[in-house]
Amino acid sequence: MRLFGRRSHASAHTDAVIRQVASWCLHYPDDALRQNLGLLGDCVGELGDHEAAGHLRAVVEHLRSTPAREAEQHYVEVFDIRPRRGLYLTWYLHGDTRLRGGALAELVGLYRSHDFRVEGGELPDYLPVLLEFTATGGPAAVREGERLLARFRPALELLARKLDDITTPYAGAVRGVLSTVPREHRQEIPVGPPPREHVGLDPYPSAARGGNR
Image 1 (cartoon, helix red, strand yellow):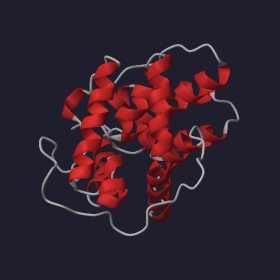
Image 2 (cartoon, helix red, strand yellow):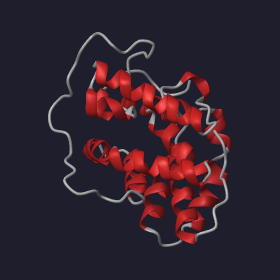
Image 3 (tube, rainbow, N blue to C red):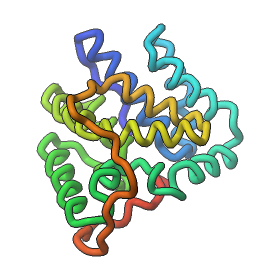
């Protein structure tokens, strides 16, 4: 995971900070994440009274105050057991179908066109990856990332609602991201389970797996 790129406009910089902090917070809470909690707390402090600040601060404080093993277990229980709380965004739109395979391939091509590498063998629709791409890229990459976040906003809203239902601090990270994503007209939150199909996803594994371990 990278740290912050520099952008000149104040609101654009604020959005980049929110997205990068959320990206870090939504990764599996390994040693690298715990070692950067001080930096993440400082970055949240830069947000002042922005609505995302309180959301992100709650996640950082959860990670600071929770023993490592307990934090890891909580992460797995929140994100890895139920796909409807997963961080793989194309799943919400396409389920395990050939359409999802095409969407994943499109994301890979987009990242490559901007010289962005997905580290750790993650799928390209993993929310922390998309947030990092949008937060750290050049102007063209930021525009593409913001377009994708707007496209996935219904999935993000559903994820936030599901996280609210189980009262986890991670809901704050997603709520923080949503504060940077404009609502497009005629967007609807997905209802019911997405379609399922057992062909067409190669070479991509199922989304029902954890983050970086």
